[in-house]
Length: 215
Image (cartoon, rainbow, N blue to C red; front, side, top):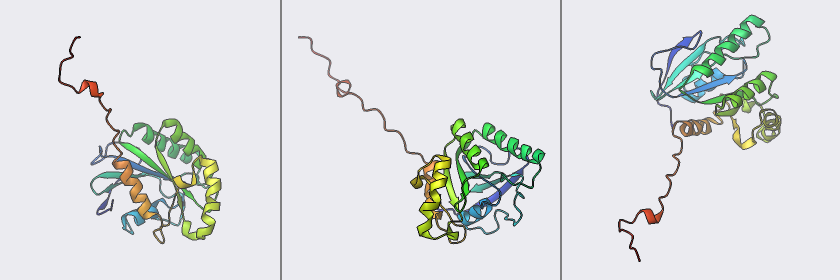
């Protein structure tokens, strides 16, 4: 697929109805400063669609984007920012849990991790939560331009061990040079147009219109 149109819809302090709700949704999660906004901007080729900030933990709302008038990207608050007090962290956690429990339109989650670092306890907790909820997800290793191509496989190993995925299931992504953009678009296309299960083949004996002859 190709993204021809991308629009900001709204920011929500808690998940509720919003204009256009009912379309399929793909959510984006990850720790603060992992590059969620940069990924959205690169994916849509709109540099200022999602606001980026040098200050981690700034995104404290659920941001909704309409893509191709076909589905919604849901940018959830970044987690794991140490300078936020426990009360605020608890509020963020409840906001995200309420979203996952209330969004009937959610089809898939993109879990962002920084390829340069091992997944954090918060990353592992999110991974476990999605598995327990039965929510399909894909791991996106961001900032892959910061390391050499040869080092990527080595850096993916601890991510695979921590999040219980295989290397070929991870999409390496760079918002700087566009690495992984096409692969991510293909993944979105698969999510929105799942393969149809083949219909059961009817037994040949049931297809005959001729009555059975009694010997």
